[in-house]
Length: 596
Image 1 (cartoon, rainbow, N blue to C red):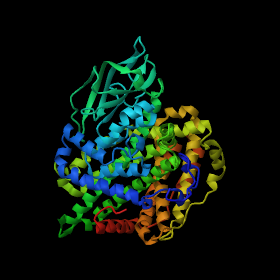
Image 2 (image 1 turned 90 degrees about the vertical axis):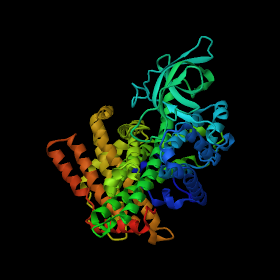
Image 3 (image 1 turned 60 degrees about the vertical axis):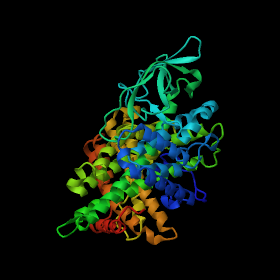
Image 4 (image 1 turned 180 degrees about the vertical axis):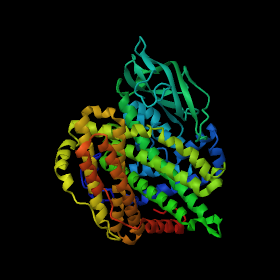
């Protein structure tokens, strides 16, 4: 990674270990190749998409196919595909850049693209046989074939691994007869293949590659949606579809491995696209605030508008830092892997599984940041933001789906803690020994009392403190409930939010430290300020969440003692956040956009 030897940090180990800025990847580490990819994609979007924005936001399957072919010819659909199958075989940093840039400027077409390159391609790329890869991947990477992912059913949404769709082996052993329905399937109106899932003999959850033109495959009409009007969303019906046995994807009964790993990368791509969407909304909001004059001056000069701009920028900086940190982790795990080797797909899936928690965190934080930013964009535009034809109205409608698909944010919150529990049970996450040690020392800790300007020493101590509080609360919950903690969803949600806050704060802190220690430390001025403001606000939230968790588990004198401890430790030293927010906003206004 960037020519430096870096320790590979395991999944979720940021909770147990002190991470140094040398161990993470940030946008400041982009290579010339990364920058070239970003520039080429921006040129494609400007030339082919922005000029046709009204068409892009209306169902037009022929246009979608045309754009997919053009994107494929330029290599954007084959970033994750080995060269031997017609792909670009680039790193996961490049994959994140492509998803984010499509999110920034491609409107509804971004959904068509990231569904295709994620869950509409990765199942066969990761788990396909050599014959399956040779048959399908060249077309998928070139855009000659379009992929879809059929998992959701009318009665199996979040409970996706319990479908009613069935597959029955024919007497001659050559085919599976597929029967059932799948709904809300992106790209269904013009896809060529769909990766779908059924229970063999009513019990063995299995993945299949189905070609859309096969007899017995039919489609409902297009769904009329709140947003993303330019995307195709239809239901599939399978009526005795004869699926050749060679189109079983992976092993019979192991379809969950295919589905969950594809979704993991899919949700990561959604998080990246959300950040691109949010950056576009932010830039439009700042541009409008500089132009809109009220009471004799631009509204960007008013304090409450500056507060909005600063908070939007801080959330964007956190999301950006988290996304590329996670991309760097996945890439480091894959470093040196021959992507054309027989086991490349399985090892890539292993890396995605390793960072399952980080991918879920990025999906949650990215989509909720996008929602926050587009909502504030509407507010800054005022009445104009509510009017059809203006950027905020479209961005607001399009954003809402991102907290639902690729696993709802509620499901992803459950994934975070349940995965940690599973790893703790297996002994790969050292929870209970750490909890026992913290139980003895945590009340002896001293709060961080001061904060020096232009330095981040206080924030380094605060993040260590926050991790200890989370591990203390998590250990207490695990000790009290054991495996029954899975049923305490409210408690899981609280702890997941604490973990998300810590990952966001640490990602921002490490990126700012890296900038401070770089060749041009003066460029870190605003990032350091954003780090301080984020910590100031977030520590209070972590303390509040920890208190809620303790109140759900304790009472009496013990609860009172622990709450006092939380309130004493989870406090950032006093800083003038009003002035600091103004400084952040003034720089964003001066540049006229998000400039990191």
